[in-house]
Image (cartoon, rainbow over all chains, first blue to last red; front, top):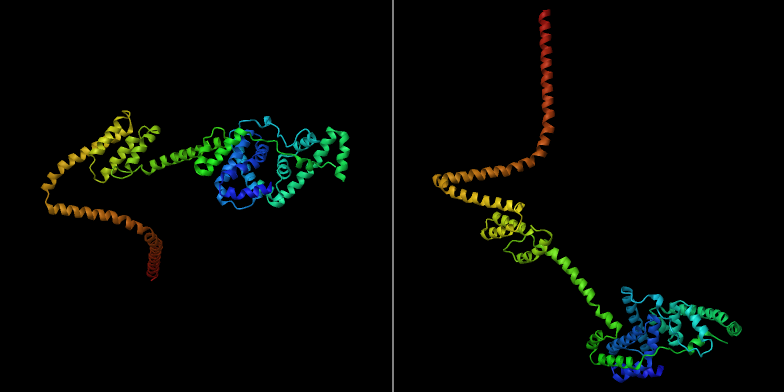
Length: 192
Length: 247
């Protein structure tokens, strides 16, 4: 994926239609998932993705960087769009927060321990969910996570470390509660 | 052997943008590549975009700014133009603002006209037009309005002046010109005297204080000295008398 992004950077800088289409196909779903995690609204998430690409189209000639930084730039733009959406909602609340849908975290029920993982992630604070999502699902580096979330590098790494520890603890608890027999293997796995 | 982070890494985002939305998005992105500003503006009016709908509300801060400017500008203009006269360039602003003032005070227009009339009278300017305007403004007020009485008083004083002006030429004709000059001089002298008096009185306090402080004790001491001398003389006289009686 990184190579694909690198190959697209030149076309993006030259504002090439084809390059933008390929970039959209490559990243739109991931960006949409990230936006959905932030705003918990499908329409708003799609709007955020569209807005990020339009902003990139306007800023493309000035862009300097590789494919990874282009990806981080888009995530950051999506985040800002979502923050705008939050501000708009705070001014005119339309949907009560307690009726918001649960975030469909990545994965399928066919995956082993998918339910336990979903339970564990749901028990974490939203900020930690976001950090884990960006780092492990969207596969951004620690530096990119820091850039997207507007944090310093040490703060981002420290927050990631805490989030990973919290996830492990929550996952063990979820396995114990949902499938007690499997908890032994999980504990063994942690020890090894 | 199960690490939740590994499990997490094997997940893929479940969010999928539909084909219809994709084509719509790409159309707008391509449009923004052709004309960035135009596309951004076009997206404002796209019905499906929440972000775009959000931008539609950009008129709110503009409207607020305009309202604040209006609220600030009107009283400022009213205050700034309150004492303007008809021959000044701000006078049309004053007239434009007056209907708004009138919402708060019915008599403001008559008040303005009468004040303008007074200023014009003070500056010996022709007042016919101003008088007519004041009459029109006052005519809209209650019969017992204070401004009616004010205007009546001004008109009366104007009539008196006109009557005096008719009478004055006869007296001036009778009086010799030298006498008139003398009168003028005397007026000037008297006015100078009037003007001088405060100046003297201004100087007085310090000087007078010094004088009284210094003189009074001296006079007292002189009186005392005189009295003492008198008493001494009396005593001397008494002693002389005694001597005489002794002798």
